[in-house]
Amino acid sequence: MTDARLDIAARVLGLLDRGAFVATYKYAVLLGLLDLCLERSLDSGAPPDFVTTRQLAGKVVELYWRQVGSFSEDVRILRQNNGKQARILEEILAFQRECREPGITLWRARHQHAVRFERLLDEVEWTLVKMPLPKLQRVGTRNDAFLYAIAWDDAVAEGRVRRYQRGAGDQFDNRIVFQPGVAGALVALNGLLRPFIHREWCALVASLNGLPDSLLDDFLFGTPRTSFPEALRRDLVELQRGACFYCDDELRSATEIDHFIPWARFPTDAVENLVAAHRGCNGHKRDHLAAVPHLEHWWERFRPKSERAASLGRLAAAHSWPTRAEEVRGVGRSLYRRTPDGAPLWMKGKDFQLADERMIGRVLQT
Image (cartoon, rainbow, N blue to C red; front, top):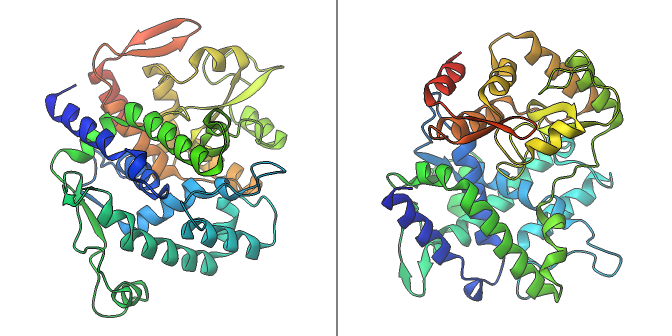
């Protein structure tokens, strides 16, 4: 790791002193920025120069969506603020109740209640503009804008932001502009920073609710491994012509759905990231990136006008399942293009293949 990346990592970790936090917003902002740097990568693999407050609002809603559910019979909704409940969680919960469908997925809610969802994004965006974004890089009374620059501070007028949201005059500059080298560093540091932010988030929620943090990680960030409908599993197997995505042997019993880009590296259940695999193959792959032959097989899903892409689209529509081809493609491109020569990539069983940047580049160019 370069000295510049080490410096950025150290400074980000320095921001995460939970003794100075009264809510979990700063963790959500950092994770949202990590996700957007991966999703919004250019075809070259370069990260974006900036993201917008609207894009960040969407990611923050995604992060909190499951967290407003009941934690247990005794604890309905976990407190995530030192005082009254965090406003963003209140807004998400109110929206979910208006949907009148217990357990509704974010994907269904966003598409079935599109107008109301945009109003939810308005409220989340305004909260981010007013509170965590101007304050995230503040240590004590000193503001050290080493991650990003924004064109406002915490004295920003709400009316100005509301006019921008309505598409009226007095345009508000909603860009979050990364400082030179920061977006690339965040992509490279994703595997280090994400679990650390998860751990700190869990610890803060545990202290706010008087709970052991060991109980919280799966609820706040865990993979919903048991929530895949059997019909979706069957259709994925059929799409793969009855064969395991990794070993190509026939799928009979003990078939599992695997996240090709591991959940620990980027949490998405979008259909483009799902493959059917033997339990043994899935168990051996775990949180590793798959080797180049598997990447080439998976990358066929993103080729223009490919039958695989069309089939996945039809499968997603049939099951009302999320489809996010561009974002998942961007994440895969970002992660693999930053995999250095010689890094181990999982091939089969306990066998690994050493990464070759030129081979990876050839696959991603097709």
